[in-house]
Length: 389
Ligand SMILES: [Zn+2]
Image 1 (cartoon, protein in one colour):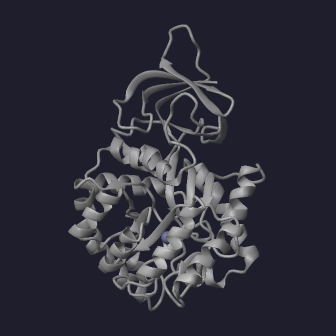
Image 2 (spheres, rainbow, N blue to C red):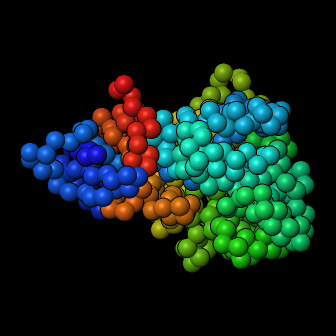
């Protein structure tokens, strides 16, 4: 199959190319070459980019106004059906790879395997299984309690046994859990260290939910691979990020979508009040971290209130608007960077890489929202979604 692009972005920060043919062989990219006269492409589009990579999703969440209540109330069948529907929704919106950072009942792992086996449509996935949290801590409804270092080690072993291919830890309170204070540290340094060392021994990367300053630094010092949210980071945290080469996944869409819907009165007051605090810190701190050279990877916390799985284009737009990234830099964060963090592939379009790509009606440099309405989504060399048919 030959796809012709007016403008071609390969997912890196290399200069975009004009008038390019992308040749697909099977499930991989065979060649990217200048469009040859006389060669008839199978499809042509104004712009081609890699498929989007979302490093932070919850497939069991569907953007409900009260996510905690909705997820905690679902039985296994309901949660699985929601996750299957969300996987298809992601793919149709051009998200071809995700990292699920917390689901109950083994749902993330089962969904990942069903997609890989071709049973249901969806993106390539990594899944953390249950999040490791303190007893009653943030996210308990998609988590499991640990209250000392040996429980932390055992929890990693059990999640690994249950098929997790990354680990999620809760280092601070959060917005969506009633009673949890986002600024407060939750899991202790020795619990973080024990779990991270155990996970790394088995080749699993560890992501920490961390909003408060102390918890962010606890996780960074304990050897974490990525900080999720990171909104209250300070100068010392920025230095730790850089010295330890840790990714920041800022989930800008999560508080933004909550605050965009406060006037309909559908959300619990505790969610709105905490989102306002967190949003203020986010606007103050995340751009500073990016400008200081912290590696920012795209992740939206899809599944949280009004932040649905087909909304990832919004995270890309917010990285452009709030962090000062160019559209190409935001695309890089949401493809190549996020893919590096997830570790399944490089998230770029080059010979030998997976043929996951989007055909868009407009150049993203002119209209970044073109990412939200792909004309054609290709995953593993096959048409996953065609808006024109
Ligand atoms: Zn999350």
